[in-house]
Length: 126
Image 1 (cartoon, rainbow, N blue to C red):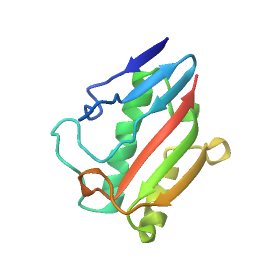
Image 2: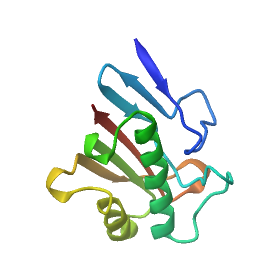
Image 3: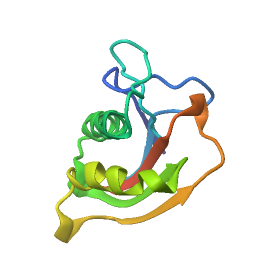
Image 4: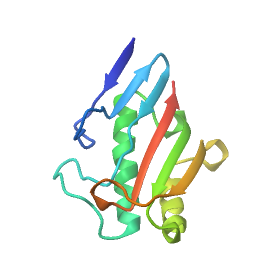
């Protein structure tokens, strides 16, 4: 049986999906974008702030499932502009121990929801 994970510390879903689903000991998160859950506003003033908000949203989802970034085994990063990769990678990397960081792919896409610049999803294991 699957368990739906939800926290008010991360943006509420705006469609037929959940913030995350826990099946057994594996957590599958939906992609997070830079919506400030307290205000509902996008944080897109610069790519560093935007990526930090995405990671803080993901941190809240992980915590709601009783996990941390140490539990993450796989990440997917979608970005609008590969020229932003260095900044995104730097902010993303600050949330992980480099020696135990998860597997990951990063892909440039044509468009993202709400015209944001970055979206990140993760898989974590208890």
